[in-house]
Length: 509
Ligand SMILES: Cc1cc2nc3c(=O)[nH]c(=O)nc-3n(C[C@H](O)[C@H](O)[C@H](O)COP(=O)(O)OP(=O)(O)OC[C@H]3O[C@@H](n4cnc5c(N)ncnc54)[C@H](O)[C@@H]3O)c2cc1C
Image 1 (cartoon, rainbow, N blue to C red):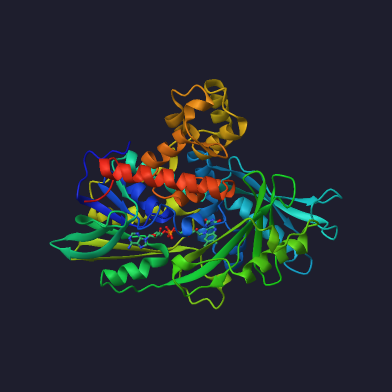
Image 2 (image 1 turned 45 degrees about the vertical axis):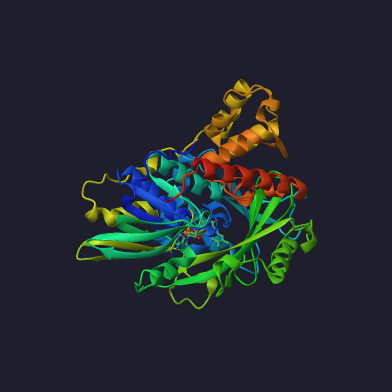
């Protein structure tokens, strides 16, 4: 059950935006002892933060733009994430096929040398060069690949785990709650909230405000009547999901003639995730979608490299997001910096407003730390940075979790145990405790999804709509059929309505 006991309406810090940057700052702030509230107008990770390539990576190609600060910080975060969230992140080996007509071998070797040496690796293997044999899934014209390490992460669940960690530290999280107004009075922010589920509104106060609205960062500033010095440049990126293109655990990074790179990543056992494109975007960030041209482009790049070819008819799912990059006047979408920047202003030393521009999933924790360091002078009693070694909720290695699930719940089918271990880690015990057979799990929604898990997700992980569950808390949207989805949607709707009527869901007002 959600904790609805004490809902303060006066906070130290209110964060606008439940993407990775918003939850990262809010989680860090709560651990420093601040009373924190986070408001997300849609679902947690409902925008860019569930639309990424799902990599915790240094960004090999950013070395070409001399982004050494960003790459160094990002490389170090790979080991941190593997430690604090071992259930939702794991090492991934990348193969970069050598294309003589594109980047020369010496340049790739130099890039990989820097990649290996800018980072403090404890667990990730070194890069190396491999000769390909006839079994390679690549076309026979490719004779050599460069192999290096990066890290895979479930992006949407990384956001969720930070929100859970925030709540564990006394923070309030309101989803489908839009920040609609804000003004300063007597050294405090007075902030208007609107619950998009119930229509209720409420005014809360806060000593500081963080604008982590991602693609909407300047819209929020307009709403607060503040002018931004910085602006965002929206760059659309799309991914497609197809049945596995090749066997093997390795991912591929494919160079294209437009100088872009496209990843082909093993996805959920049976699929390949392919992306991304980079297209300048001017429309509503909510309306972003994968165009026919982008689908063709991604299929074409894969077909240039692999023996198995794919067509747009093989696409089972696609998704798009917009990168809210900090405008640096680059002429090309590909070369706009992926680094983040802050804008901080206050009124006579009180009621600060910190706006976040840009960033990557990979660097969210450092961004949170830097954001709170820059607000430290307004909160002299706050503790210092702490997130580097603190495990996120449920943290358990997948092997440890599978072993424990096998011992305690031996009746659990292997496919479900694997999904639970890779999504929840030890959080799975919250809905498995006391269950001794599959029938104890309640109603069967298909593809290994049962009532106990759905109830847990509604009451503990802010699931309010069917898509929250199918595409962000899990990726079961890929396997449930239309009929099963309708049954699940009805179940969630009726339970959310019941929760609202009984006051068991954490809402404003
Ligand atoms: C195609 C693509 C691939 C990527 N791949 C990677 C990758 O592999 N690795 C990596 O490190 N990074 C990657 N990134 C970058 C990364 O995904 C983004 O930098 C990151 O998700 C941005 O997070 P955010 O919190 O700033 O924005 P968002 O996730 O968009 O969150 C902002 C939130 O603010 C909310 N909001 C806005 N206005 C209001 C309001 N008034 N009230 C309440 N809430 C509001 C929105 O609903 C939204 O949920 C990728 C990005 C894209 C687009």
